[in-house]
Length: 262
Figure (cartoon, rainbow, N blue to C red):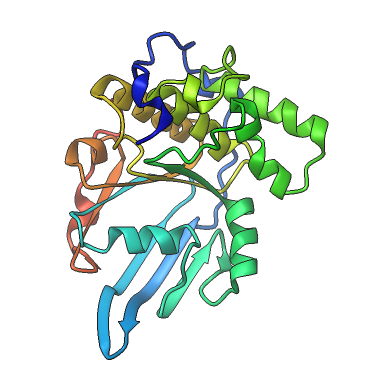
């Protein structure tokens, strides 16, 4: 239960989203995601569980892709590998051309900060910090100086329609507003990949729709967006949907093309 549970999650009182006024994000010719023959096996004593079984996947720069599957399908494990929160048991994973398959935890943490912007279902904002202080966190880890951090954090919040709430703490914001802050934090460091894990799971339908619109506008500005979901209606906003089941991507799933817009 988040602190926002006592606040109405409507986004009606926020400013309009203006992601597109940042201009086009440069598109690289190198695929953002290249996964080849990835297996992930969890071992507990003599018990082995194959969470991923030979997954191969390529996502080009500037694509909007949904990875959809039910509980237990392996999508969470795949998300952890894509987000450099875990490494494969076997197979290779190149992120923006960089092989991250066998990196140490320290190196993976550096790659996460440089290459990936995360949007989580639970928002993952620090309750004691204001909105702009939450947004600046990736820049602190990147060693950006204080004045530049604040300027970039304020600009990112303004772009997602939260320019008048920069001093508000998470408990003073609705669920939808907190998710906008999380999106601003995800893009403030200009990552190669925006990885959204069930970003609408804690929101009402109106707020969920507006957050999906925001992700679509990020994609329209040239960013690569990967959306992990169990919901076919949510997946439909992406340009392409890959379906995952029993640790494998279904052979014909790449042909499932969503509306790409709301």
